[in-house]
Image 1 (cartoon, rainbow, N blue to C red):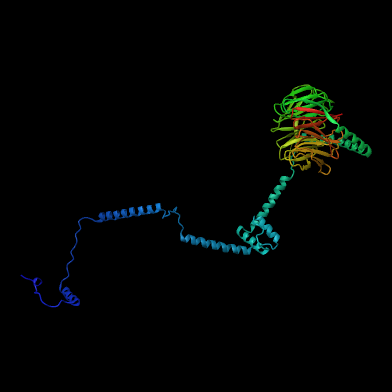
Image 2 (cartoon, helix red, strand yellow; image 1 turned 180 degrees about the vertical axis):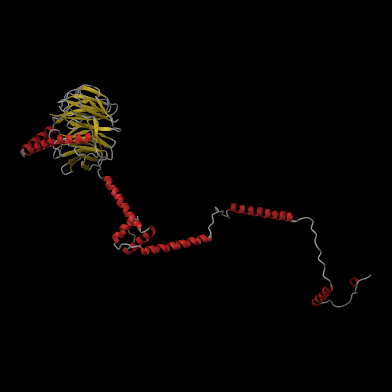
Length: 536
């Protein structure tokens, strides 16, 4: 049975229909056709796993492609990799706001700070705060504003604090420069009282002799001075003796002028007869360089042969006491940890002074057999020590180029000798009691006036450092100096004119001495010899 849809229409010669006509026909056709029924789809199994696989495959392919591209860009240098630090925009904005608020707060504080109108005080304040006191083209008003600005940053109390710190530092510096004292032992007090009773009568006798000398006429003084100068100009080498296998570092006459003690770097100390220079005794006790070997006052005069008559010191810190009978030391003085360069007897013979390179010097009482004074005061090693003829003062010279005069009765430093450019190696008091000579490494000898505490005269003595200085022990009318230029020189006192140059040593002169009677001069040298000089 045929249907309407299966009817075939014959072809006709009609004109083709226009688009509008086609749309109208189609619309009419659709109105006639019933809507198609939507068929339901049937799924066999879940597609979730397949979808996940598809998505993961896409991600893997895209990441592989992207990572390869990124890696290629990094290798080409077109992509920079940071350390991972990030800065949030909000944080930057907040920091700017805080900076602006801090600036406003600083300006507010600056308006409240009161600054002095005195330009000098403003400069002092800037200097105290470590700021330049002035800038190029800056006036007083600009300087005040700069100080105000600085105070607004560091705080208004910073200026007061800096001033307090300066005052505290200045106070501490003053305290460091002040002399401080501590309580001494009972034996030191007894020794000081004994020294006062000993020195005052001797000072009175010295002043009485000076008054007597003042009454002598000028003509008589001039004649005596001319005769002395004439005899000194006629000084000649009287005796020369090889004293040891090593350099001879020290020489000293006995109180009776009949013996000469020499010390050597070999550690040997020797006694020689004067004036024939025969060896009397060799004293063995030191193992290293001996710095000094000195006779005790009254040794060989009023002391017995068995009494302690000599003292020596060495570079290993040992100090030994000797008598005139034995070749071995009778006692050792212990307590020094550094080099002991010099020993010196007090005029009374009761006390012994030692100088040490531990920046101190010491006083030993042989009656109580103990150290009664350990005196500091030098900033470097103390090299030489000498006692005043009255026994009231002691003078020390150190490697710090300063000398000090100490009052043994009170313990105070009464004179500070400042003027040498290098180390002080030797000191000696004049018999007049108020002149002190110092020999230094700056090639000069200075004579100090103790009454006004000033340098009286500077003697340009030698061409090398001075190792020893000695006044004439009887009257102090001439000064003897020895130096490392291989010579010793004699100078007039007063006047400080060169009278005689004692040349003859082949090495540097390490020690000089004048006999107590004033007739002989001894010099010892690095060339292992000592020489006696006598006026013809």
